[in-house]
Image 1: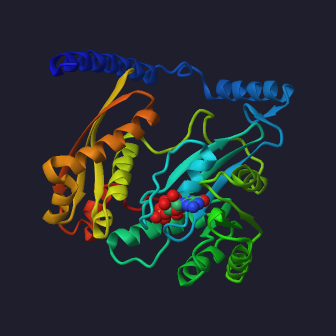
Image 2: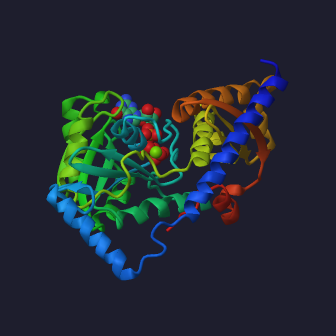
Length: 359
Ligand SMILES: Nc1nc2c(ncn2[C@@H]2O[C@H](COP(=O)(O)OP(=O)(O)OP(=O)(O)O)[C@@H](O)[C@H]2O)c(=O)[nH]1
Ligand SMILES: [Mg+2]
């Protein structure tokens, strides 16, 4: 398609978005209950409750005995937390890679079943921080330990339990939540090795339960979900049923672009990269986005752009494929690469890129 025609089509689409957004604004302003007194509103809520009870429901549309709550996936960097989260949700919502500290933001993702709603909280790997960014990642992860119903301590079965796990364990022990040991990557070890790992991990924390899984092979994923659900309190659901994750679309774009950089670069480059999605426009048929990839040095910028711009082109194509699957429509993605020396130790930049700890 020639570029002028494409732009015309895009413009039509964007006019549609604007019209939709105006309609949304009008909806927000329209409050059907504005004229009711507090007493009348109370009476309405009570009547709705009675009607629910008559159908065997409590608290709105929640069946009796329904469980709902939060499960934090915590552990060392690279343990396999985000891969397990994706396996549980059944869609790739969290980015994953062999590079430590892939996850930089807490993400909630929801698993809905007839009798429970489980909200998984993916967290950055807990480690001894070396820079400002590392400290923020740790703070995000550690904050979840006191905020959830269940802590799932994820340990890579193929890496001997060591000082890194002991460091995480010390923090997990202090949590009042139910504590479950999850040995993942079961596909990589034999039974004898697995038993050694379980024993070593149990020496660190007094766990309430233990399960062995392989997220990439889908081994024990459903039993893992059921086990987590069995420890949730009886409660109505926290999120509406159609929702997969609490992460906004622009953030998902930035994260998927960063994942492609992690998968195509080595050594210091993956750690030096931050991605910001600067604009996001969605219409019925397509999404148009612009993102900036920040690095710390000119040499890193050269690597990311590559010979004749080939590297950045590959990164863009990889990210576009994932995003098209995620958003279910065509994606136009533009990428820029910029140098921002020392951003990993600059609190303002860390916040601007969205990697700062948020209460
Ligand atoms: N063989 C195997 N590999 C796995 C499994 N689960 C995860 N991996 C791999 O382990 C690597 C790390 O996985 P992630 O899910 O990104 O790990 P993480 O714990 O979220 O890492 P951080 O976000 O850095 O803390 C990736 O290369 C995954 O493909 C598994 O069950 N089996
Ligand atoms: Mg992760």
